[in-house]
Image 1 (tube, rainbow, N blue to C red):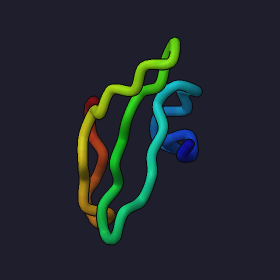
Image 2: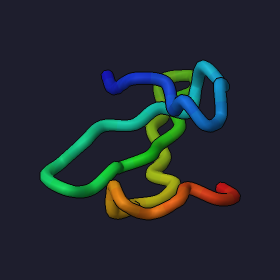
Image 3: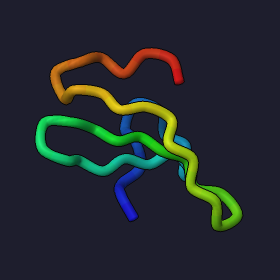
Image 4: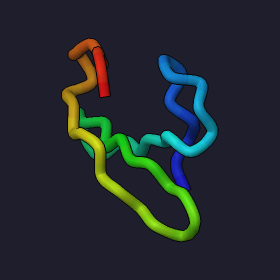
Length: 47
């Protein structure tokens, strides 16, 4: 399980790093939903 996304501070929104990319996902009730894939140099913005 990845770390909590610092910009959002919501326990169920998490991220993992793969190469130069951030995979941002939500994890609730045993269900994983991929929210976005961002390059590390990009601002996160709205989800």
